[in-house]
Amino acid sequence: PDCADIDKLFNRITDELVEPYKDLRQSNAEIPENELFYLALAESSHQFRTGCVVRGIVKFDEEYPDKDPGKEAGANPKVIVSMAGTGRAVRASFKKAYAQGKSGFGSDGKKKAGHIAGCNRQFSPGEAILARLISVATGRNGFNVMLSVDQDEDKWFE
Image (cartoon, rainbow, N blue to C red; front, side):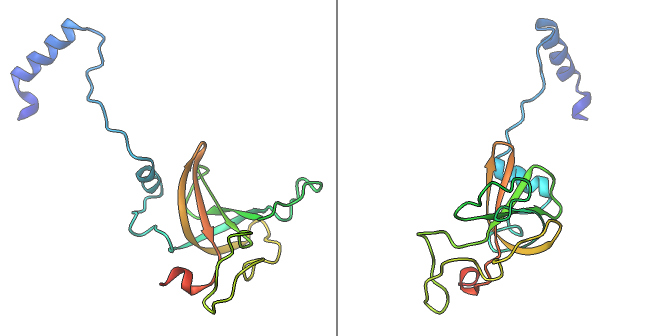
């Protein structure tokens, strides 16, 4: 076999004698960050893509800050979610309202503004949700996953 080739063994020993403490291991190619995300989830990019349904558990609702009652909610509050099957390195969230100044149009042609249907309420920690994947981005402390609970079919099925 190739691993028992005497010439290769001789060359390896010679290299180690010439530079005794040199690291002779082969260098590995760096994995792109988006592939690292799919590897960590044990999913493929073909299955876990924009529009796919994701299950999650609500961690907290930014519109109703329990920890800091004096803190006011931002203009576009989010709900932070723990996605099923992911660890701490994945931070998922969805917006409760349409972005101000960037409101879209629904399937009926009317402009959308305010809360997304079903989001004009407080989401309780531990509550199960179903959402659709919008995007995955790499952050400083892991991956940021943007979800959507918008039920408008035209957004997902064009």
